[in-house]
Length: 116
Image (cartoon, rainbow, N blue to C red; front, side, top):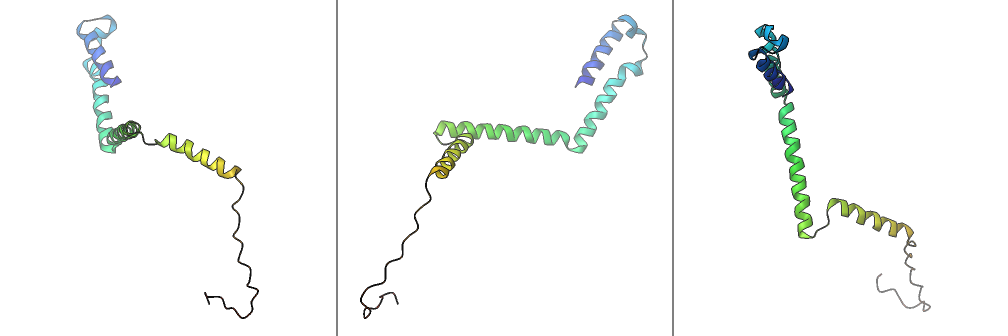
C-alpha cells in the first residue's frame, strides 16, 4: 500500500508540474506502481496474504467465543487459569490424604474371612 501512495503522489506532482517531479520520465513515475504489482503477486503466490486473513479470522473467532462465554456466565480461559492456580495452591498447602488402615485380623482362629 505504501508504494501505491508514493506512486499516486508522484503522479499528481508530475501532472501538476510541481518541483523537479514535472521533469521526471514516466518510467520513474510508474516504478512505484510496478513495485506494488510485483509485491502483491509475490504475497498472493506465496500464501502470505491468505495466512494473514486466516490469522485475523481466528482472532475474531476467539474474541467472539470469549465474549459469548462471559455473557453466559461461564469460566473464561483466563478465569479457569486463575481457578486452577488457586486449586493447586490449596492442594499444595493441604496435608496429604490419610492412608487407609487395613482391618485387624479377627481374634477367633476358627472363623474364616467371607471374602476368601
